[in-house]
Length: 230
Image (cartoon, rainbow, N blue to C red):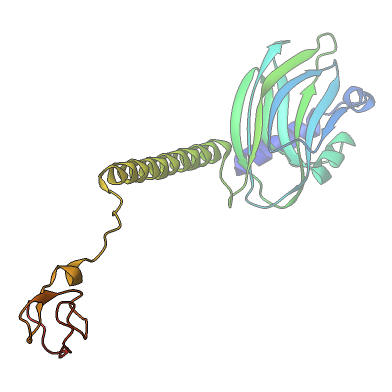
C-alpha cells in the first residue's frame, strides 16, 4: 500500500499538465452503491465518479475495461487531494494505473469523507470509452451477492412453509369429510319401558293399566303404590 501511495504521488505530480487542467472535467456525483460504468472520456479530459460520504473501512470495488482507445490512466483519491492534483500541487492517490486497458481492484477507504474514482485521458487525439462495474461494500452490511442469497433463501423458506400449512389444512379438511360419512343422525326414540311393565291387583288378581294407577282398572279396588310386580 505504501509503495502504491508513493507511486501515486510521483505520477500525479509529474502527469498533471496544464492541458488537462484547462479541459473541463466531466463529473457524475453520488453514484449508487452498485452501478455500471459506461462512459466516454474526451481528449485531454478527466472523468470522475464521486461519493460525498464514505466511512473508514468501506470498500470500493471497481472493474473496468477500455473498449475504445487502447488505455487510460486511473486512480482513487479523496476530494482534497483531487483539488491539489487538479491545481498541480503535491497530492496523494491510491491504486494508480498509468496506461491500463483492463483493471480490477478492491480498495478499503483509509479515512471517512468524499472520495473519487478518476479517469484521465492524456491522449490529444482519441476519446476513450470505458465499460465496467463499480460497487461500494460496507463492513456491517451484506454484499449484493450475499443479499441476493439471503433474499432467495427467505423466499424459499416462506414458500415451503406455506406449502406445509396448505397441505395440513387440506388433510384436515379431507379427514372431516370422511368422518361425516360415518356419523348418522340419532333418531328420536320414546321411552316405553314404563308402559311395558305389568301390574296386578291384590284384590282381584287381574292385571291393570297404567302400572302407576291408584285404583284397579278391573275391580276398582284401591291399589297400594308399593304393590307393583313386574
